[in-house]
Image (cartoon, rainbow, N blue to C red; front, side, top):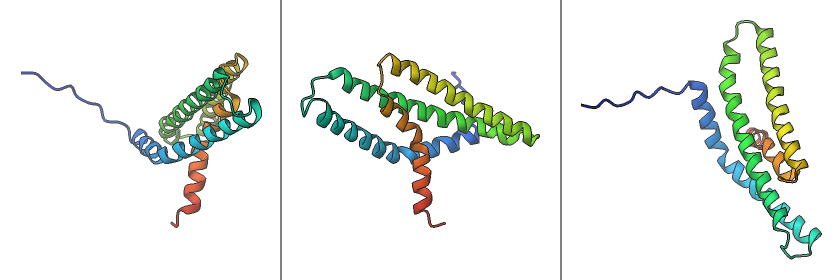
Length: 148
């Protein structure tokens, strides 16, 4: 007789975070499509007048979008996991310091990595930074259209 492995239940904060990420999927798709079209138009009209010859430039655009989206999703998940800990802190001042420090460490790490990759010409700077704003764009648009 075999026993099934016991699954650990996800925390409530992580469940809320995953639900919010699922809600953001259309926003991610639309924003990435806009960035991809804008980058393609820029490339077509400024670089080679309609000829896709520089494959490395196109790969930098794509790599920037992929890395930017991964960073945005990872950052959002980390924020969701840390939010429960921050709320549970008894000392309000300590909780605020913890949240601020966590915020700066996440962004400093991300921008240090992005800076190195941009300097090495692995990614495009515009396509990597834009996805970090997608959660903000999502919540602004959601607030504008929410009647509650």
